[in-house]
Amino acid sequence: MATVHLRIGDLVWGKLGRYPPWPGKVVSPPKDLKKPRGKKCFFVKFFGTEDHAWIKVEQLKPYHPHKEEMIKINKGKRFQQAVDAVEEYLKKAKGKDQAHSDDKSKSDKGRKAAKPMKIIEEDDEDAFKGGSSDKEQTDSDPEPSSVRRLVAGTVSGFKWESSPASSMEPITKRLKIIEEDTGSTSIQAADSTAINGSITPTDKRIGFLGLGLMGSGVVSNLLKMGHVVTVWNRTAEKCDLFIQEGARLGRTPAEVVSMCDITFSCVSDPKAARDLVLGPSGVLQGIRPGKCYVEMSTVDPETITELAQVITSRGGRFLEAPVSGSQQLSNDGMLVIVAAGDRSVYEDCSSCFQAMGKTSFFIAGEPGNAARMMLILNMVQGSFMATIAEGLTLAQATGQSQQTFLDILCQGQMASTFVDQKCQNILQGNFKPDYYLKHIQKDLRLAISMGDSVNHPTPMAAAANEVYKRAKALDQSDNDMSAVYRAYIH
Image (cartoon, rainbow, N blue to C red; front, side, top):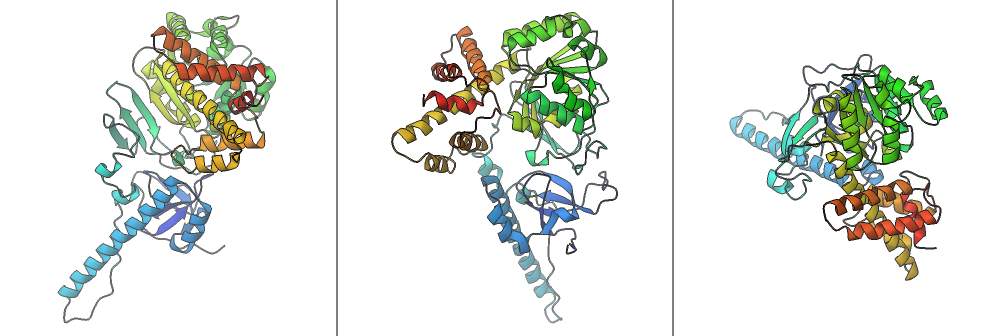
């Protein structure tokens, strides 16, 4: 392999873990950020994002010689915006170069001309953020103007260093604390491309109950990032793989809670969540003053309120933290966590949330607010999936190509990884569960009930719910939610 010679200011393509090569610039690292031991690497700041990381030299390529190659193999709006930001940066640098050259020519008139100096502004923030002014970003910024941002390289409890449990490159993850007018806050990565970073795990003992589609990925990531985890599952055999990865085994939920400082739960529905806490050898029997219980299941607000009351009545601390995502996103550590309840528990869980997700939000107010938010999110997702399935079948019924329908859809405003993956799976007849159909139907049912409780109509969700119920009647419950497609063809 040819040796890569780089210096401060050089433009490069940097490869971060499983993510595609991304344009960046070699910069000087912060004084308090040490270079990883025994590794030849450079500190790179990426264009179009606020991310920066130590990148191994073998994962770097000079920008200009490989530009055409990278543009051919990488697609997507954000990638193109990053490339555009590089070009804008180069234009600015060229302009400064020319201005400097002109100034030198005037001052050195009559003397031998000096070689032009290449001027690189190391902290050209506009270029790295995409070259847009605040006014230009108003329409594209997903966050409302009421959001007040604080961006910092270090937030208490979020120090990023290499971990012996991880073979991944350590990176500095810039964190945003977002505080809205409602009082809700979020601690999140500035961009998901930084998710490969190593974490300094909490020294608290972690328990996890429920190793289903979502829970399995969560536990795997907790272990990879160096957390001490004790697991329990109703079907004990599911624990074996995690025991091999270094987890400890708890014989009952009560034993797990008694052994651990923070115990997470992720089960299928309200009944399972209640049984886990209130049943024989359940969570409640292991709760002692100071013990933390985090309910990650998507359930109704009433269930959350009940569980919060019984946990706190024993001196325990309670947090609800349902997740938005799928099995694949869980495996990748890219879930979105929505939390409410005891704020101090949320802060104690910071390294856990960073291990399992790309973003975590804390919603102020009473326990149950996170459940309400998650049901609304899943109601929208479930209704959207049913509409996509309806569109695919209508295309077929009217003699249109379903693949062409998908190709057009994925080039328009509704383009997303979710649409592309779900539609491709439908066209391939692949309904392996990534998010169970029975679970999205449960979420729709709970969302409709929540709407009824406040006299708010949910006719779209109600219509989608009926389609999912038909799919369940066709034995699609344990398939992926995209199997709602089959409700239209039978």
